[in-house]
Image (cartoon, rainbow, N blue to C red):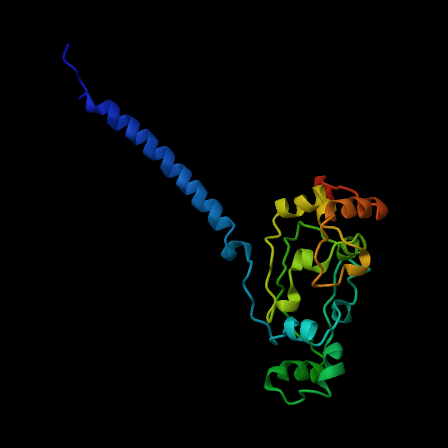
Amino acid sequence: MSQIFHPSTNTLSKVSIVSVVLLLGGLGYGLLALNRSPYVARTKIPFDQPVPFSHKHHVAGLGIDCRYCHTTVERTASAGMPTTETCMSCHSMIWTNAPMLEPVRQSWATGKSLEWTRVHDLPGFVYFNHSIHVNKGIGCASCHGRVDQMPLVHQENTLYMEWCLDCHRHPEKHIRPRDKVFEMAYQPPANQLELGAKLVKEYKVQKLTDCYTCHR
């Protein structure tokens, strides 16, 4: 019986199979890279705001504490947004005619709140409580990055579940003394793991990784 396929068919079959595997692997890697890109994860991208508020100027330049504007961060789930009255406590006396602050003056005159664009926008099925994290020794910069160096705030971290779980599983790597929570320039000491283990015990931090901790 004569041979049906040419001897080179075996080679072509092997090359085809390897090519398909490599193609699928490359496609999977590309999709993974896209999913973690700034475009999808929303990291490093400043958003347009009704007023170009600079945390770098107000926090690093003027030394304003986070809690001056985010007044409820220590006692409620939401950190809170400053009211127009908070802005006008200063800007009724300084930069009173600055064009960029016209939306603030209009808000003050009409009583209509400014509509800020949310930067750290978690899905509706995710529950996050600022006060718990702050009172357990997790610094603002741990999640939000060095906002004191941001002319316009952007999302520093992906906020993906795996990112949150790393901290929940190993809080000793991230926890700091409570009096350093709002210190933007805080640097972990050389003995962070030793200090962290001590603070985890002192602050009664639980390594909560059950689904219902965040998904309610």
